[in-house]
Image 1 (cartoon, rainbow over the protein chains, first blue to last red):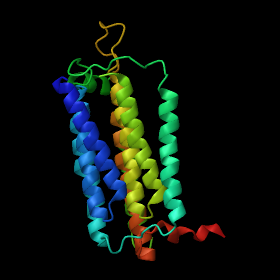
Image 2: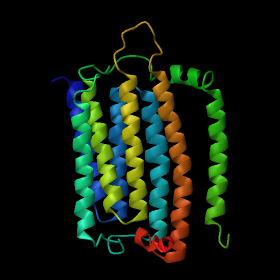
Image 3: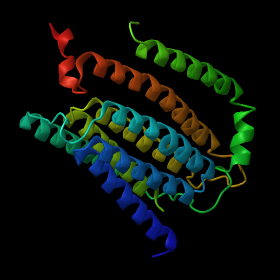
Image 4: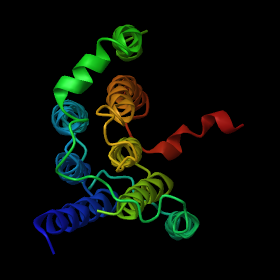
Length: 168
Length: 107
């Protein structure tokens, strides 16, 4: 078992375990912290796949900005395990779990025989994910979507201000 | 690594997100589970972008997928700001983040 495989299994188990804890933990703050661990594990996967740009962006944008925003809102509302609205309907709880597990079962069974099966993914090699290539592509072929996304950000900012303004 | 492992990992993460959306009642946790599902899709896109190509001389093969992942992150950041503003507004009106309070449109 090579170092890459050991790292793959470690990061996968970390991602899956903390993702389960996101759903299972009572306190919203704990859920957010476990989700940050999941995002770091996914960033580790990106580094294993030699997609360094996306790994860094994932840490900065998701673990750094979005999760801090979530944490900020939870702290602002003073949510904790006591004020957590628990699922009273047991049938809904079991039904949701069984539905998700069935979805996983069906998708795994369907994709087990797919045509990509057996193809290998390049790890620790290739220069596709380096910032040099992606930056060049972003400012030549994809410059129009890049500019449009700035307009999207502006409209999201205005929308957030308008929605959360008092007596809107 | 075989690409199957990445497919199954992304599927498992996605299904955990689905279970969270279906079972939890806290609006913020439901929103976080949606982020988890988005990240599962991103991981799968990156894994597919690194498939060993038949034409190895093409140096930029698969870079489109990584640009797509970048734009998904951009859209997710914009989505989170608006979504959290809506949740804050809902909390201000009902003093709760329980989604079951929001069934007033039913009848």
